[in-house]
Length: 138
Image (cartoon, rainbow, N blue to C red; front, side, top):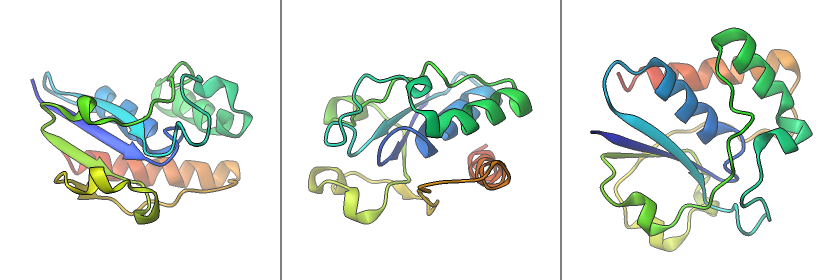
């Protein structure tokens, strides 16, 4: 079974959306997980996305547009053990938030913005951009 890991900075937005879209649209027995590089530092470890008001817009759009519910996703820090046996790593985190130990892994870099604030229209465009990148994996 093929395993893909998406990694962003806080594991609140880009990587959970990418993993959820991947798992929803895949046509085989592969699966995706998501993690963040700064989850522990930012104090988000173990927190559900539903506990962050700024993420509510993404949760709503994914649910309404694609029938995908990420509200119960729990923010998790990337550690070496979660990368064991991974077939592909997609790095969405900015270069300055990638720890040195993680740079030794082979990964594909996706340039996607890490927004501070988005309107609903911006969030829809953001999700469509992530979806297009995910679909390029199939």
